[in-house]
Length: 179
Length: 253
Image 1 (cartoon, rainbow over the protein chains, first blue to last red):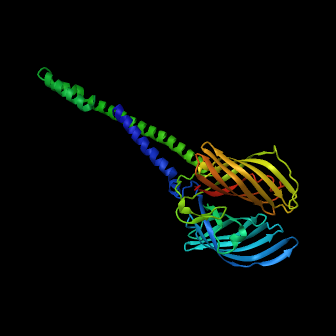
Image 2 (cartoon, rainbow over the protein chains, first blue to last red; image 1 turned 135 degrees about the horizontal axis):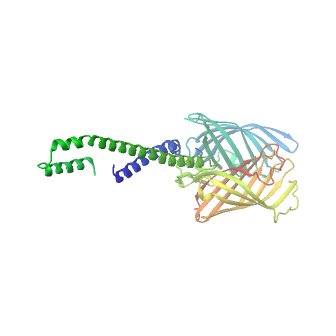
Image 3 (cartoon, rainbow over the protein chains, first blue to last red; image 1 turned 120 degrees about the vertical axis):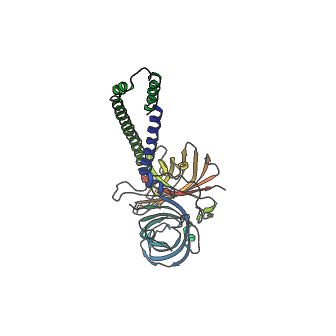
């Protein structure tokens, strides 16, 4: 075998083996980059349009007014269609005299592929009931089984935002695959 | 020189010398040599092929291991890189002022993490106590390192914050921030946030304008962080050492 032929065989074998091994090592990652994030976290942005409400019970305890078991429904539109759908919210709220508040509750987002079930979300409202924030972690069911949805919701001028119909609610967050 | 060329030379030699040599005697002398020589060549060629294959395997294995280590390192990063900067289609979102904006018009969702690097207390003051708060602090500077899904919003975030903490541990935060990296800056003139009554969760929202390489863009960031239950550090002062950040980038128009 001549020297040139040896070099050719060496390079060819190297390229073939390196390519095969690199492909084997990176195959799973390459196929999961759709949605653009290496680790499988897929960010989205969206909006909730509140469409209906059921008044909560009201109890005054000292400086705090306690609202319990209120209901809200909204239509969610998001850049990721898995998040879009109808959300039903149960909320509880402790309102202070300066109109700031702590709130919590549960929620379910439903669409034709499955649902996102949140047993407990938490939130807070700034004084004067201006900015309302909610953090929601929900588990997927149906086609979303095995995924977790994490949402941060912000409402500006929250009293008005909560009064249906209103679209003053920005949703941001991400979907991640649970290992 | 290969076997065929050798055989042809030998053939020519025979033709030239045939009249003068005893062919039978010559054949008798060389016949037992030719097979041995061919066996030696075959052995040498086999050894060379084995060496080439072995070297290829060793070399390829080394490169593949390097690639594997690189991929493992990248997968272990806490915040990851969006390679596709094309805005998603469909859906809508609202800004902090409530103005509806179409996602299709160019909203790019972002996410990532922040790590507290430094707290600067120079210039911190305690203004006259508002009756709504038990503690007030003004002018505290907090420096975070942001590791975001878009490199354009990764960098150093410097927040100048005022805190008002109530008796129940809940708090209000106001301030401004500047996010800088080597391509430009994002400046948020008005940033606001709250801390829950149990002091364990903090939320904030800010809207920033881009400068330098980010001219013509607007950034909206929502921040959420939690503290470990039982922490002796007052939750609102300073904000948590880390947190998740989500939001979006859109045109400033």
